[in-house]
Image (cartoon, rainbow, N blue to C red):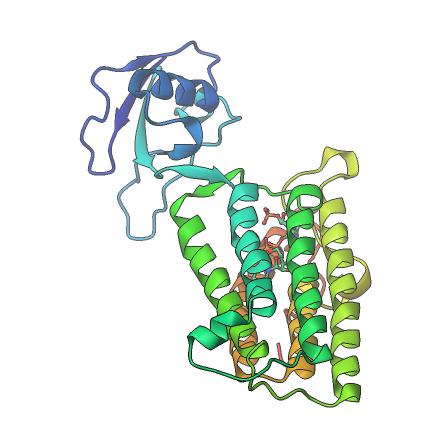
Length: 311
Ligand SMILES: NC(=O)c1ccc[n+]([C@@H]2O[C@H](COP(=O)([O-])OP(=O)(O)OC[C@H]3O[C@@H](n4cnc5c(N)ncnc54)[C@H](OP(=O)(O)O)[C@@H]3O)[C@@H](O)[C@H]2O)c1
């Protein structure tokens, strides 16, 4: 069969058609494109069918495992495919690793090198409050846990993400790590009472363990009988909340904030909450759509989305 590759504007993208066997898959086509262009490796390619005229028509994305024949109108030996360059890609694990490595390194710097405050004009002897030490361990444990989960727990459905996300997401995490650590370890920081500190860190640690358990439950959704894709999360808090992993994530930051009591920490949790609310709404919608109770599909149970009793 012959495949004509065009750009989104409809112009010929590669000179001449690509010849493939009748049993070729989309992955075979991607390999051929890579071989011809050298530059566009498969995960950089987004291949779609040309959009049919109509206001609400969305492009059909070609799945790498499917046969090209599945996208022709039955007996056609020619197929026109629209090519889009997704830009340089990195593995999801690489993206998450760099996001979380920054906070793991940056936060302790302000704790271990208080000279930075002298450079900024603060004089006098430094007194380390217990809450500052515990906060440093709590923070480091959290990001260490995230890195471990990235490599040993999560089963991502998307292999890669655009390289630009590494810089954008890292800027977010690294900047907040510096901002919060700077404030918590500041010589003029005023600690909260011992009881409040213990309640905050104790509650936060419980939520971190609950968050790990939520991630293990999500992981197990994709192990049983080689099942892939999205399943209905069940068990523990997932029986009541769609994104229980985000709920426990938010609660563990609230625990950290109860113990450290700083505006910087509350700003961080508020910004994180905005992102997670958007993602949780999208995940809830997707699960309701996938599991609509029609044609033998299970019906997604009634659940809170993120933060009962508000959402
Ligand atoms: N503080 C913050 O601002 C912040 C922000 C974001 C994340 N986080 C933390 O990082 C963790 C990971 O974030 P994330 O956004 O990647 O979480 P996520 O989308 O909820 O997913 C975690 C893993 O579970 C999989 N998964 C989710 N729902 C599933 C379902 N219904 N069926 C099968 N698999 C499913 C995901 O697969 P896919 O690859 O298919 O999505 C992913 O591999 C969060 O839980 C949170 O602890 C924190």
